[in-house]
Length: 123
Ligand code: I3S
Image (cartoon, rainbow, N blue to C red):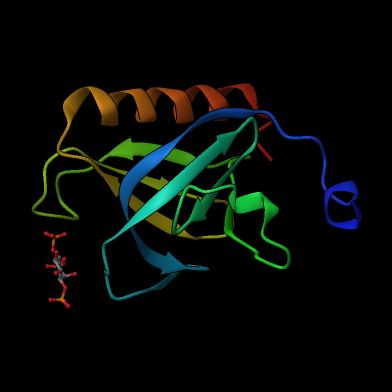
C-alpha cells in the first residue's frame, strides 16, 4: 500500500513489446544496445520493463521512466540501419530509439505517444 500511495493513479494507455535502444543520457551519447522491452505508456510517461507480468507489483522494482512532458518524437532513418525506427528525446536530454518490423504495430505506438505528448504541457 505504501508503494502505491506515493504514486499518482495511472491509467495505462498502451502496453506491449518493442525493440528499444537508449542512445543518450542527459545529452551524453551512449553506445547503442538494442533490447526487447515491455513498454507501458500512460498519460504523461513511459515505463520500461523486461517482462510483462505485473511489473508494478514487484516490490522495490523501479522501471526506467521517461517523462513525456516537453518530449519530442520523430521518425529517423539515420540513426539505425533498421526500418521503422522512431526517436524520443526528453527535456532532460535522454534519447531513445524504438523499432518494430511490424508496420501497423510501430505506427500505433508512434501515434499513441505523439497523442500523449501533444496533450501535455510543454514543460
Ligand atoms: O549505429 P551503430 O553503431 O552501427 O549501431 C549498431 C551497434 O549498436 C551494434 O552493436 P555493437 O556496436 O555492439 O556491434 C548493434 O548490434 C547494431 O544492431 C547497431 O546497428 P543498427 O543499425 O541495428 O541500429
